[in-house]
Amino acid sequence: MSVSISEGPAIVAGYEYKLQLEAESPIFPEGCSLTAHVRGRVSDNNVIATLTTANGGLARISDTVVEITIPPAATASLPPGSIVMDVVRTDLEPDRHLNFTLEIPVVRPVTRGL
Image 1: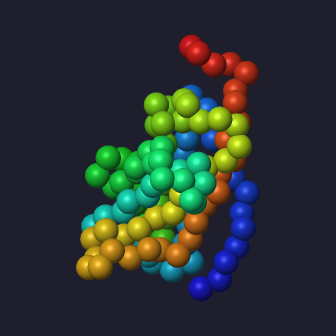
Image 2: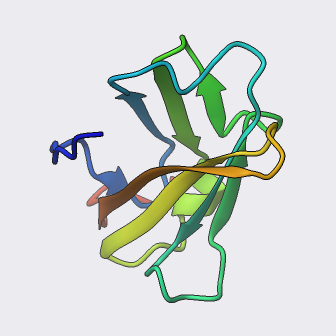
């Protein structure tokens, strides 16, 4: 497994965030269940949002692509800086960590409170 760093869009606090991730191998098979915790730092106990395939926060697009959606209610209270998250397959026994962690920048918008 190789590791690469890619730049993507920042989360704009108070607005929906979407990002599609593409893996090198088919780690998102049809029917898989996925869960991700969004936290301010890896060491934080507080979970900002729980994203799953069941709640629409994680959507399997293909065997190699998943789409992350963080709703505005979850991004509204985020301070400028960054958040972290990873993804776990929960349809396997035991659950399987997919061996990647995302750090996504958070910015405060000029247009807010609409």
